[in-house]
Length: 132
Image (cartoon, rainbow, N blue to C red; front, side, top):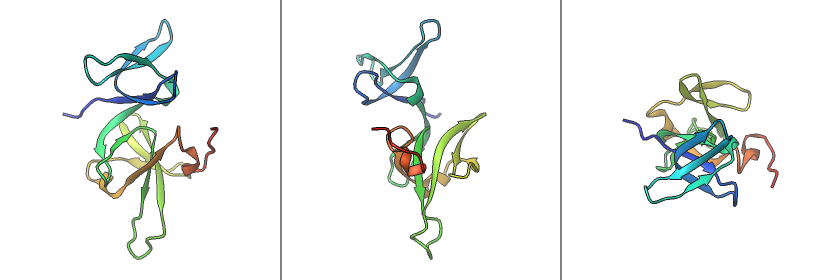
């Protein structure tokens, strides 16, 4: 069974928090309750919320929706790097490249990738700009 885990950036200090997603659509708040029963509730920026894919990269780091992954597929050309954004489309986590092409992120395939950033902290890695 896949672990269900979310992350989001706290509204008060921009720190990432991990745990269970809590929402109240009537009042408009979104938050994360920490991973342990004694952990508090943290209001988070809804735009930063991402779900854990259940997969880990080549270094063992968890891969979340919104992460930017790097891969070097051709050992003859190690300087050629491919980058992808992890998104959720329909019913599956997908990888989207700079041109908008996408493919499913599947178990086993993720070991070719390394998490190098995310769309919220380092959008420049996918051709965007950092606002900070």
